[in-house]
Length: 147
Image 1: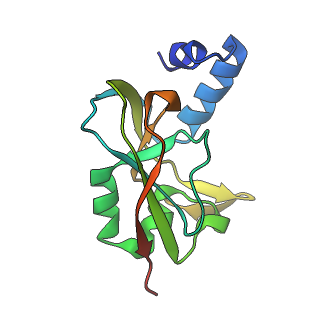
Image 2: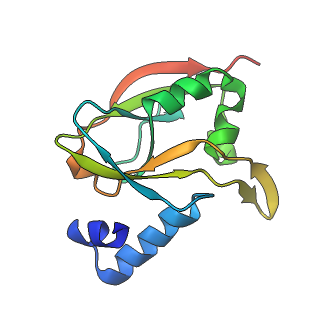
């Protein structure tokens, strides 16, 4: 299903398989197709001063971010962020479906850097395969990590 969705946005079969494999490998669980409607909000955190790339498919439901805010010091760890993104301040961006859309939900896998464990993962991610089905990201806030 994910490969078909990637092909429908213009990727070749090989490109769609490669991108789907990357999305699948980012999770500790297999992605499950999850329908959204126009009232659903997806969010992403990026180091303060930055913005989400135009191609990133990695988002989370607003409720997941609220759960992570209960222990902000572990936010980067649970999201599996690479070392360069483990900072003290994150900007929060939000997108919403323009109409109904399907995302693929999975638990974020633990990560390693040069074979050394880096993060535990464990948060829930929502993979957006076709960003054209969503509004442009708007900044909705900032999270400051107190040490």
